[in-house]
Amino acid sequence: MIYLGLSIVASTIILLLFRWMRGAGVNSRIAIAINYFFASATGFILFDHAPELWNEPWFWPAAAEGIFFYAVFRLIAKTTQTSGVAAASIATKMSVVIPIVIGLFFLDESFTTLKLSGIALGLVAVILSSFTEGVKNWKWPLLAFVCTGIIDSSLKLFQVWTVSEPEFPSLITVIFSFAFLTGIVHHFTFTDRAISTKNFLSGMALGLVNFGSLLFLLWALDEPNWESSTVFPINNVGVVTMSSILAIVLFKEKPQLRTVAGIFLAIVAILLLFLSS
Image (cartoon, rainbow, N blue to C red):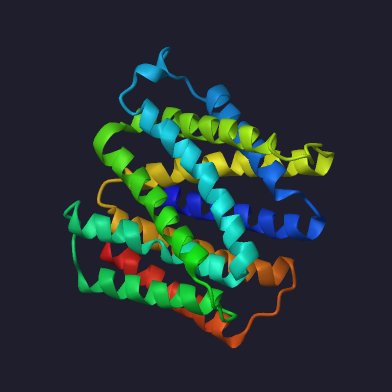
């Protein structure tokens, strides 16, 4: 439970940093590329790794995952630009359905009334907390929904099939390294390549927290008696709840009635999912 809580805190900090960056004039594309550099550097500095990582059976799938990580970040940015913040938020948060389905139907995880009730309440809470405007074109949100769900599901499959717990830091380091390389290649396709101090520091902060967020999530998935169909909903709903509350406190955002209702339902959903575990 400690690792899951730490993952929720780290993921919430990431969202708050993005919220701050939007108002501070930070170039998110540059900050995201720098973020992946510091995330991978954190893994290389803090943890020991096998001398020939590229010989590990999971190395190249992890490399592909890293490329996909960066591509999905850009897809979410595209979704935000074309369909709005609310649509992007709903798409990425509702994608939790995909790893839940995989856990329940393909990994033989348990069905219980408490778990299913918690999942259902959590989804309603996410919709209430995120949905603030109508969206006519759902092409980009749908792509974001599918791709984000694939990333979450693949992390669970890495943990189940190929990667042992001591290898988690190496897995994450490889993923972030290839995400950084992809970001650098993409960066040089633009003319605005200058890196300001604000962009650099924002990327550094994102990277340090990003590494912890993913590592804590993998450790939470590896905890005995904690199934992915419980971990992912608690993590997702917990992030929505904490970030919504802190946005009100730190950024003086005025919550709508539906947001308050969503936070209340989210707390109930987390309680039900915790009891189901």
